[in-house]
Image 1 (cartoon, rainbow, N blue to C red):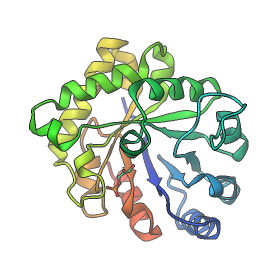
Image 2: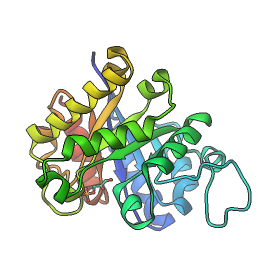
Image 3: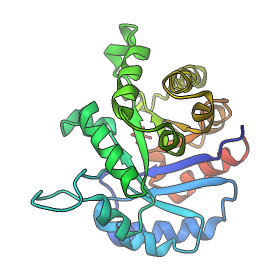
Image 4: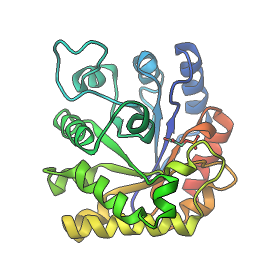
Amino acid sequence: MAREQVIAANWKMNKTIPEAVAFAEQLAAAGDFAGVAVVLCPAFPALAAVAQAVAGTRISVAAQDLFWEDYGAYTGEVSPIMLRDAGCRYVIIGHSERRQYFGETDETVNRKVKAALRHGLTPIVCVGERLAEREAGETFAVIERQVRGAFAGVAGEAVASLVLAYEPVWAIGTGRNAAPEDAQAVNHFIRELIARLYTPAVADRIRIQYGGSVTPENAAALLVQPDIDGALVGGASLKVESFTAIINAAKRR
Ligand SMILES: O=C(CO)COP(=O)(O)O
């Protein structure tokens, strides 16, 4: 089955509101990107302005995190209702930087996935092994634990509709991307795991991205892999030119 590729720009803690809007306007003017789902993930303050800037285009907006409650006394947190209100369609959940610096666990990831789905946001769920885990031969075990944890109690129909991002921690921001065949092997493993946990039809529909030092130079070789359905891009998503080149590499699959 032909799955639509999802190319997402995770800007992390970069870009002010004017910078984010200028990027969105330039990207929207660069093409209509038919056949590819293009997603911009600004920091919270810029979400609404970017959503406005891309209204009426095929570009969507994602938050980089959310909290699982709808409202209440949770100082500093942002709810799924607020993200919908700001114009978000997707939300990144469980990025390794959140797991590493902010105490995210498989359990909090699971609560956030359920909250996002409850409010019609499409989760982009991040999984990935650390270098020591890869070197110890634990990659598949780590990924399986993270995927099972993220989706505990989540129905197959919902899982089929969301996005998973395989992001090996050692490849993030290091300039050292996973070899295309290694990324393909993990993405294929994830798809087989989804088939075992749910059904082959669910596994066939879920979109599984790769992330970690994706650049215009290496994107085509990664995106041509049969189980890689897009990219979650950090550093190379900060410039319109390099991000557009990665989108165009996806179109050529
Ligand atoms: O973490 C990432 C995207 O979520 C990847 O970041 P880099 O593309 O900068 O390695």
